[in-house]
Image (cartoon, rainbow, N blue to C red; front, side, top):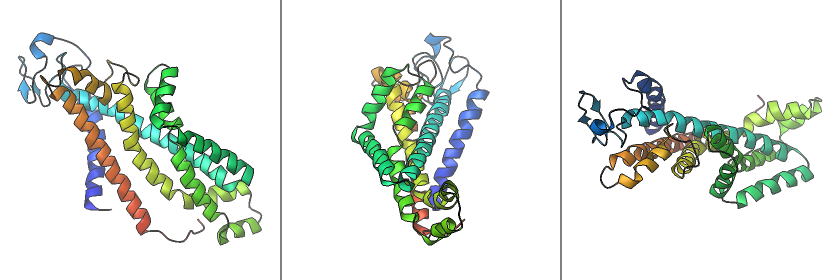
Length: 279
């Protein structure tokens, strides 16, 4: 792994730790609205009348933006990771069954996959979120239900390339059950591209969650997420740009770090590519 990739991993780990520890140590409740007149829209590095220091300033309700940005990181990182992992699991299952089964099942599953791929994911997200009440669980489920298709096609391709290899034929000759052959001998050799896709999908899921929250279809205030924080600062972007810039830069940095880590996994997979082996 390159130095840049290692730095990206450490930066993501630091973000996760900070999002857990820093809000818990805050002197004030980051969701509380108190003493608005004296604290509202303080610029970065400003000090409030009580002597408290605000690294990124405050919002229109006098709440510390640094604490709220880290608190929102919990939501965005959880949604991105959970949505991408669940989509990956669903994609692996569908891709494995499609690649291993007969022509009829393969054709049916790939037709379903192509149908979902033909519809823009954002349209599917907006449709699904509009049908159910916005919230954390809804966003995670919708991200998983609309993000499995690319993983399924990758796994299907890998499984089809492995199903007639020597070690699979040997397992069949020994009378091993088809399901056991697939799970123990084929899938471990087919998961590399899927893991790369899931890693890269985390950043994409964070972007989509932020977009839904910005439109008011994701996590709802007063619970902070990067998307609804940006939405809360869009009408004062000229007079108090830090209110929207703080969560916006957090989104950009996190997605960039996830992309760097995903690319590193991809390069590592290419660099260590070797003929499949019997685990």
